[in-house]
Length: 72
Image (cartoon, rainbow, N blue to C red; front, side, top):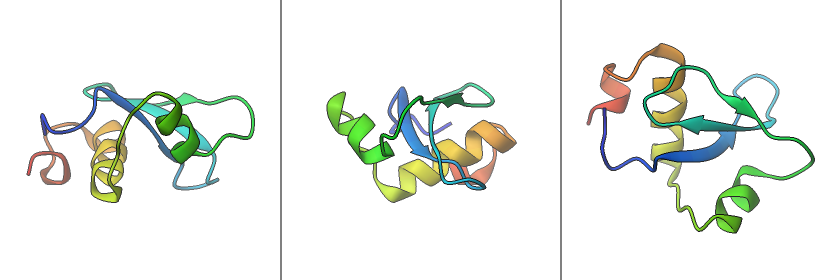
């Protein structure tokens, strides 16, 4: 698992584009209520997430934290 990932962050769900929160090291995700974008959610919490980190978080939550997308 990439230790350069934030402990948690909001990203866009790959199917419905809704805002979800992913916790590093955990499978699955947490839906976010309301009409807030991932960028707004993260900014409100002082979290900086690059597009690459968002992809790594999403991949890890879906396929496991030891896959190549989350370990570089």
